Image 1 (cartoon, rainbow over the protein chains, first blue to last red):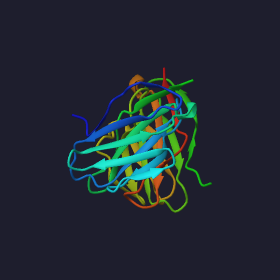
Image 2 (cartoon, each protein chain N blue to C red; image 1 turned 90 degrees about the horizontal axis):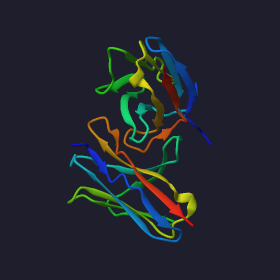
Image 3 (spheres, rainbow over the protein chains, first blue to last red; image 1 turned 90 degrees about the vertical axis):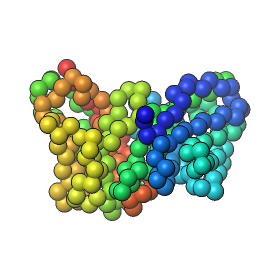
Image 4 (tube, chains in turn yellow, purple; image 1 turned 120 degrees about the vertical axis):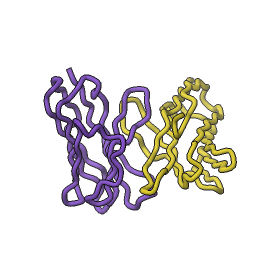
Length: 110
Length: 113
């Protein structure tokens, strides 16, 4: 079993839709989590950190559920420019290595 | 805006040849990571440095891969000999403080023929 698992998608949604991705992690000792965005054949870019209290940045909301060991990302009012792969990341181990999921593809259409 | 610099951007090499990638992290970032990403998969950690020390290389194929960060600043990842299965994107990332999100360079796309 992989340490961080995501539904690969693709999620095909119309502009303006609300879409949510979930990600599960297996290491209950993981302390910090992140969402990254990756455009085709480009490097991952840090989208947001995920805090226990949840956090919001514009149209994006991230939540952490420690009891069930999952992280979520909600995107409201989807834009064409949101089309990308979204990578879930957990910090693991004594030296806090970043463990990536395989990513969830989002395609927003007109 | 400070960036992680990587070179070369693209590299084509024949199998059994040696290849090297270079990374210059954001100034002051003590933690440096090398990842490999195969198309359609998430990045896989190869090696993590804290300053000049390797703190995780559990997934590094040590029979052919080596990495160094001699002065705790820039870093080199080497493959010798390259194999067809090494074709991938090699990404370098750095973070200011261990435990924070990391920032990635543009990567080196390696093709082994």
